[in-house]
Length: 395
Ligand SMILES: Cc1cc2nc3c(=O)[nH]c(=O)nc-3n(C[C@H](O)[C@H](O)[C@H](O)COP(=O)(O)O)c2cc1C
Image (cartoon, rainbow, N blue to C red; front, top):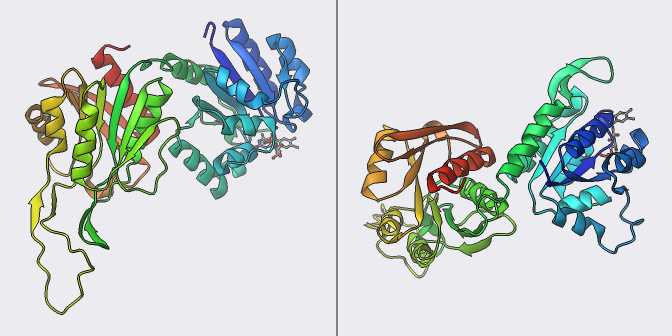
């Protein structure tokens, strides 16, 4: 923690008094802490408490600061933003991009990892609105220190109690440990499906949404890498701070990926590339008739194998989505396509594609294996990059 710059947001929950103890611990461990309270938090604990603990100003309002754009400076200078406790209200605002006070405005401008420690009444925590807001933020890469079951302010017991200080400190330490681990590295990530048209309105594709590759791109950028995301057709938003190259077909992706290969330190190929495309595509919509339609499919170029041949010194990680014998098939692909490692997921019963969750194992060498476990794709992206960095010798 020594020398780490921490932006600590405190919101208007009963657990806000615990934020004072957290601030004190962070300062004692050598962190430089800038505290921002919501106006509601100040009803519970005064800014004076925090400014006394940090020996720095503690901020509440956008409007009473001497400088012109304080919210930008505060998050630009920090290594990590932490909100503890995070109320249901602030979680909802963050999920919807509402920026109506200094804290939420600063967080909307943040390009640093954000750790949220929710704390609230158990019914508020269980409410579908809160669940959806939490899921939205998780999918955007926010990290959570989930609340615990225990005694709540109303005298009831339930899930909603602020996580222990130790758990919050662990989460902050974890984020800080990986913050600059890919600084100076160039990373290219392929993501999403491809579309292979047979007329202007019809195409062959697959169920990939690109969520895994988007999570990897976000995580690599947070670790300081310069990231290019080669993204197939998807409605998901690519992360901020990443160069995005949009592609549609496997042939587009092939050209874009090979253009990236030279000078890239790490290539992660998570796109679900169509293996075949219709031999020809009609310029106008094929008219419906009573007859069957036969579309001849021809082989697409193999993007991963081509990258394997031309990767030079880049570290190349492939993905294998398999329904049968997944590890054996993935190992065969690892060797045949000259990959440095392969992340394998079992996509039986709709797992992996189009959901926020996944389960992965990373394979390399002839028999090496690390189980990355199951979880949301942001958490898996962090675990995958931890493992890949170790193999590349970055950490
Ligand atoms: C005594 C009291 C305790 C509260 N505790 C919580 C809480 O623990 N978690 C929460 O989400 N809201 C809690 N609230 C409601 C919030 O204060 C309220 O939603 C407020 O608008 C939050 O503002 P903020 O999110 O901008 O800080 C509490 C309200 C009161 C009066």
